[in-house]
Amino acid sequence: PELFANFLKTNLFKVLSSLVFFFIVTFVVGVSTTAMKFAMIRDIINNKKIKFRLSYGKEFFSRIVRLKVLIFLVYLMILFFGLSLINIVNYMNLSKWLIFLAVLIFILLAIVFSLLVLFRYPIMFINNKNAVVTLTESLFYTKNNKKHVAIVFLILLLTGIILSFLTAL
Image (cartoon, rainbow, N blue to C red; front, top):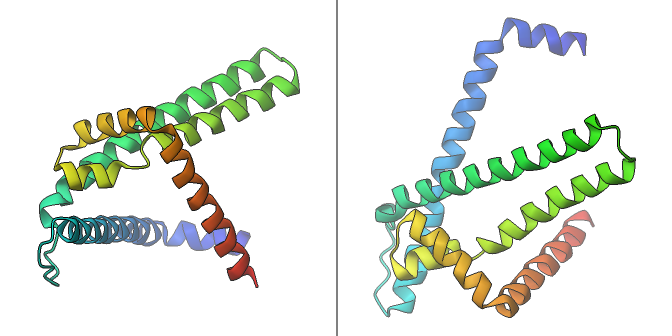
């Protein structure tokens, strides 16, 4: 621990700049990959010819960034609400069960919001909408198609569990 602390003290700027660079590059690559993937899927649905080039889906790049920022802000509000609820319960010296309940409510809010925005990218690419309209339509889609969302969620959950077991072997 002491060696690590000394390393950080002497190389703090290098470590922070490397981390910032890493997050920026992974964010840009992730957004670009998402844009390319869904633009190709949209073209397949519309029976258009797929062109394999790096600029594929670039018209969606800024919309995806705006959507990610918007969703991040909502998650921050959920985090703020959850931590506030936990702190209020903890500050009032209430039962540990109430703290557990507050944490559970916070986790459920995050899961529910994740389900509400599950179809954000398909809606954005198929309907060609901006970030705010995409988020709104995703919320309405989830509200009107609860069974479909539940089935897709279960498929994603089971796939994740199976892949976790397979990679652990």
